[in-house]
Amino acid sequence: MSNISTLVPVIAIDGPSASGKGSVAELVAEQLGFHYLDSGAIYRIVAYASQQNQIAWSDAEAIAKLTAQLHIEFSHGNILLNGNDITTEVRSEEMGRGASEVAVHPAVRHALLDLQKQFRQLPGLVGDGRDMASVVFPDAILKIFLTADVEIRAQRRYQQLRNRGLAADYETILQDLQARDLRDSQRSAAPLKQMPDALLLDTSNRTIQQAVDFVLNAYKKTTDTYKKT
Ligand code: C5P
Image (cartoon, rainbow, N blue to C red; front, side, top):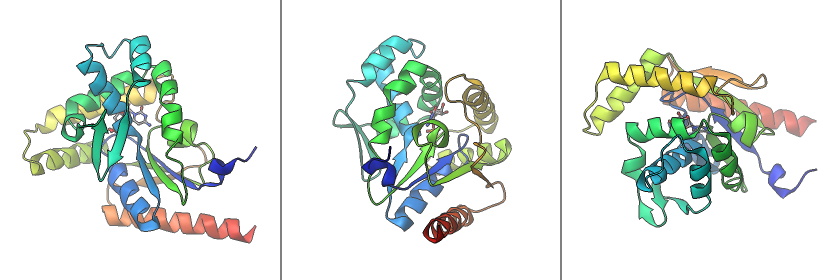
């Protein structure tokens, strides 16, 4: 059942919010010359578009219908929806929360599957999210579960927002991350969890560069093994 797309190698990086998986995935993709899929951004776009269309984040059917009409583009680090740059809007904490609310609906997840699979193009793809390894690319050549202690993640998110000159409150961020972790890992559709064949990468005491090196080494080992068999 191999078609051309299953011959394209995928590195799946899943993990909770603010674990650093986005930065790691992007740098790994850059080093390997691979494409990069930020699947969280897609859920954020859906939350944003729903709000713009006065659709409640709880309205699964209307949101699933809406996703079919969205024209999403990623261009030089910018996020475009129907031609408009909405990068700043979708990166907000509000849209992070909205994304995790729209993401609980199986119909919405289903409506976004093909769009995500289309990113699988030569010479390869690094995908980051919650269900890259379990649902979207179950045949990924390498699966990484990237995490960090919730307090450390809250601290990183706090710094990130401060560096961007945005108002931030550590306690609120911590509570928000805990609520999002709970929602992401306890939902019935594609819950966040480490797959049995995924490598655990805890970045609590690692720099981004160390995490990138871990993934690149693991990828090299995997491809070396493939070449030998
Ligand atoms: O990774 P990011 O924080 O941008 O994701 C926002 C939300 O989108 C997550 O909290 C999660 O609920 C949802 N998401 C998901 N599946 C993915 C990526 C993101 O459910 N593959």
